[in-house]
Image 1 (cartoon, rainbow, N blue to C red):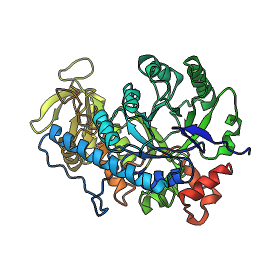
Image 2 (image 1 turned 120 degrees about the vertical axis):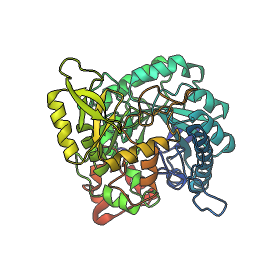
Image 3 (image 1 turned 90 degrees about the horizontal axis):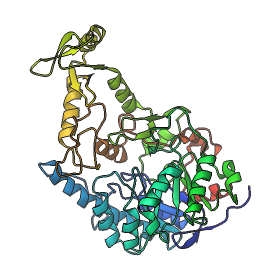
Image 4 (image 1 turned 90 degrees about the vertical axis):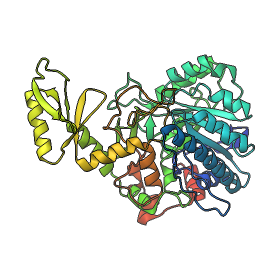
Length: 465
């Protein structure tokens, strides 16, 4: 493989190797600082990052507010404190090398005040902000205010054109790069549009070439594109290097940094990664954000699948084939099902799934009484971690609601991601992963359970492997 050439990112010449940001304490100051120290771009997540006290001890996140809005304000304070903590750690661990970026989701709750809160108190520690999961129109303006670069995450040229036309054309100098995230291969939330089918993946090269053409039209011929999602070995992308059609390219790794000595994930999580098989990572649409996401198909995901399969449509009055009365809720109010669906519903009740919960789509899902209690408790305890949540019906607006029924087919994303980040439970919690994660078990580099340091991994990547 031809040698990797350094590239200018956030004002400094660095390796074209970028650590992808992963929220809820998975990309932290330790991992991102080590990546920067190795000469690349480290990315810590400011999505509810861990905060430490003066003795370096983890500050537990405990909510005391009685209302969602009160808990939402507490969440903002925790997030700012955590982001500042991780920025300081990353800066110290970097030894002045590489670059440090911060990752946020545009659809996370209170993203703007959190960005201002962290960046105003972390001057000189953060060199750029990457942001996806939505259309971050105000990202550029915020980053320019603090004199740093911005890096929008997009999954198509069309998305970039919209962002450029609406906002970014006013701040071209601060656009440090554009992250193209493959919507079929990346881990976590994915940018599949309504016109794209989850089961019909498209090759990244023509999509990135189209993105580059759009950027050239905007005068951004030399602005780097970060290829993210599905990147494992650089030698598999050699035709992208020094390619005039694509221009300057860097490669973003989200999954491989999970299995490093500096990675903060649990030992159980690391061991699980070494056992995954092809097909174990699945695109699904259970996330309360409404986006597709990619995660390991463990017991947590299987439970969500089974819950949605125990589902029938209903009407509030007899109409058409919906003629069969069926009692729902503690008061036994009747809704109307088809003959077949009533038979199916009664069989689920007999099997122990006695509680029928209404969804926003005029369907009923059947769960056990214990599971219903857990769902309702999680919905009540919502702290507004998203700008809008399908699961709890919270929304970051004056009304504090999406105006729709809370959806019991989804889950509390804050609860499960905090749990998997701070426990050994990898079977009953959401485990985001990129679709190349099965390669840990196949790659001889990880033979006999070998876990490299970040420095060793970056050196390995530079060989093309």
